[in-house]
Image 1: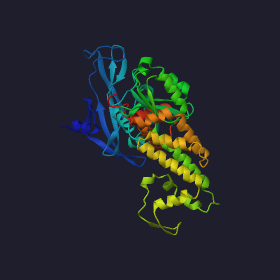
Image 2: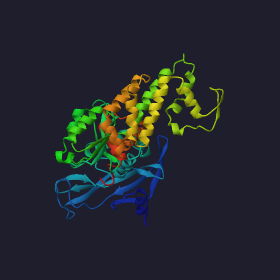
Image 3: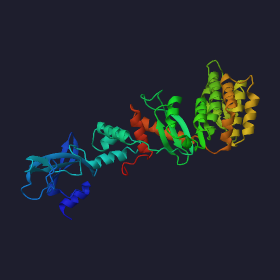
Image 4: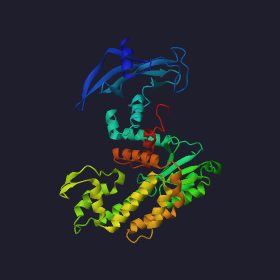
Length: 430
């Protein structure tokens, strides 16, 4: 293997017209950072003149005309060192049009200093949940260059659905960027392949209706099932758009409604005039914990009670200090058990028996009223296995992407980054 072949293999260069001398490597300090600099040259016999199109058939057509020296190209790191390729490019003179031109290579685009391999490596890094600043540092480029690549992806690469809708979808909204309408974006997830179907930059009913009406009525009628949270306006809208779809309320949101109502009652009891103030404040997790998960055997010394006590005894003591808290605790635990056992009769027995209960808060009454009004959709959640768990998981990934990047200013950039991380756009296949 020649010295040129060995060097090109190390730098991942496939251009056959680039050559290296034996002493082509030097290590220099650039702003206190060691950088490997490779010196090479690019030359070949051109087939035609790119200026006038003259075919090079003899010495009278195109001749070599000096060099364009020290063209600096940032290439991918070699052994974790920042690496530069200082390339001397052959100049040519076309005798037909009397103009000069420079030799070109596939290592870097015309008038660019960052190699195509480096740009590809940046795109691959953008598929992970790292910050753009870290990606820039890793590839020896500026954060602005990484941002420009993301901007190019956001403009050129869109989620293409070819006028087709999945049969089972999950919908939700998430806090996106300041340039989105109402600051909330609308996400649609394919329940079959567990990935994002599309993201719309508005959760307003008008914009959602406009988005879905891009698909034909025949295609919308094929949708069999939609999962969503307990946001009532969505149900009316989905009924109008998808005539044959079964609408299912998410079980997690059903539980969380009663859980929040119970916790609000506990917070109201957390005032310093209450003798159990410190106990209410410290053991809030035990009150919200599932009853069958509370330890009722192992006793541990507790400084607040000044004796050995089990978790179940702590909860029993606290809920019995207030009648409203006791009633709401029983409702919450009963609803949770009904959902876990898929017992819709028990669920609505609890709802109907407590809707006029005097010893529950306004928050809990509002929750039970919501459950009664949305009975049809909540019962569907007992009959079908589907839920919005996949959607919530994807929303969590989006939150992590935003958190790592310290937020995004443009919705298009956030959407492009989500596409890369979730594998909806692969720069290698593109």
